[in-house]
Amino acid sequence: MPDEKELSTAQRLVGDFAPKLAELTDEVLFGDVWERPELSKRDRSLVTVAALIANGNTEQLTGHLKRAKGNGLSEAELAEVIIHLAFYAGWPRAMSAIRVAREVFGK
Image (cartoon, rainbow, N blue to C red; front, top):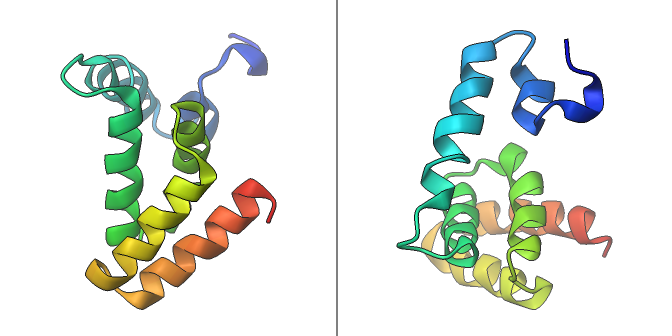
C-alpha cells in the first residue's frame, strides 16, 4: 500500500471507504474533465467555485478556493464572485462562502 504522501486527496478523503469514488475523482474528474483544453483551469476554477457557492456546497469550497488561487484567480476576484452571487444565489449562501474564504485566505 502506498504511504500517505503518495495518496491523492480523493484517496485520503474517501479511498478507504469508497475506493471507486476516489478512482473516478482522480481519473475522470481531475484526469480527464479538468484537463480538457476547451476551458482553461482558471476558467474551470471560476465555474466550479461559482457552482459550489450557488448550490450551497461550502464543504467542498475550501479545496476549490485553494485550487482557484493556484489556477490564477486572485483573492479579490474570488471575493467579487461571492459578492456577485449574493444577488443570484442568495445572501445566506454568499455569507457562508465569505466565511469559508476568510478561513482559507487567513483574513
